[in-house]
Length: 426
Ligand code: AMP
Ligand code: GLY
Image 1 (cartoon, rainbow, N blue to C red):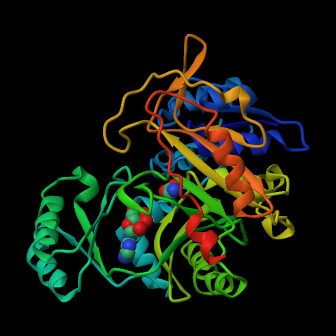
Image 2 (image 1 turned 30 degrees about the horizontal axis):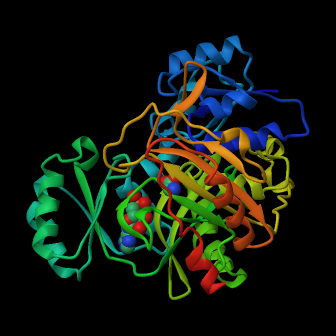
């Protein structure tokens, strides 16, 4: 089967890697991909948001299945585009339609969905610029820290958490005045949840679902979870505090009502659902939904799935996921992200990456790389995700850090404390 993965990061490299291990004959294409995916798949120089060129490639390469990595093409309606075109209609798209992707594309939509289906989430209200006085009144009823969220996609920068009331009010006004462009025309103000975060993933065919390995993401740039938010500096799976008792609450209170809610609202959601959860004293609350896999979580989730992922995707396409079983490895997977110096602020690109060929016992997933004169160079903030598995967190981390030290580019930075909090608690 010819399969096209859309995207260019570590998540897409990890998906391509997993698909390349399928027992079935597959030919994998990645658009646009990166030097890492180029080693195991055919890269196509295509922008996933240019649906016309995606269509041409799909037809000329006889693609039968398209897996959408990032959120933007989903929110822009790539599945609707395929379903509306007689030449594309029979091609499987793994990813929800535009309506389903609103779980990620609109925080106000996601919050209202959770309210309708009784899914635990922080109390909130949404406001547009014409209701600034009411927004101010609502903010006053809350205790600090104050949580402000731009409604739409804002490249991960749309959430502000502020301790000071007057600062929060000032930021709220700036958001409603257009700080995040159209993404911030509506602002969600919500209660602060105090706990530990984790990411839970399911794949669904709209009727039933399978729970995939959960993961903990390390979002801050600095060790000890200090400093600015990033796309994710590392991840660990499984998460020790996601005990069977906790996960059974997640399933009963969050996963089942979400999948049932999507079904009841006629969404025909087929793809991944990413639940960003907060564990507050042993109770799960939803912070956010995403309509895709996480990155870097995908780099630890894929290595723990033992089943053939193509069987899962095919079952999703054919609405027969309930017949499938998913075997998950009991090994621990960790990934450590090597990032460009300066990230998440400004950083330079184009530095040669050396040592990739010396990696053993780990997989170097390419996150932000490109070719220059035939050699991989840095091409983004997050550059390489070094994933390893082991019998426990310690063994997996030892491999990842040993291999990370072999990979070099100018200005390379990594967090040395990925998973340490979990080791202490484990
Ligand atoms: P999001 O962009 O929705 O993932 O939010 C970014 C980060 O803000 C989350 O990963 C949490 O760490 C934090 N956050 C969002 N909402 C809340 C909340 N209600 N309470 C506490 N932290 C939150
Ligand atoms: N690692 C968080 C995300 O993919 O949104």
